[in-house]
Image (cartoon, rainbow, N blue to C red):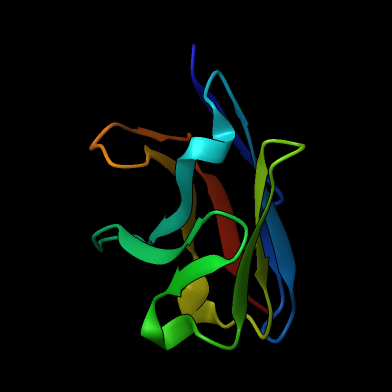
Length: 117
């Protein structure tokens, strides 16, 4: 059974940082593109970042420079370091795993990030 379990969300003040983690099980982690997406209230889910292999990354243009995605294949975990957070970053952040070369994908349950003073 595939499980993607996100953690690390919470309440942070503007300008603060958070590090999200997503632990995967039930998949051959090395063969998956891992990604973070987010959905703010009343908005569609949007791409934050993806990582394929150890170093091939892709970011939403608006988030480049503030967010960093990384992965630890030994721990089957993907991370999202978020810096200089702003209220507009408030959303539920979802982890996604997509099997390389296929449309097979899995989602985590999401973790809430709230940026507020």
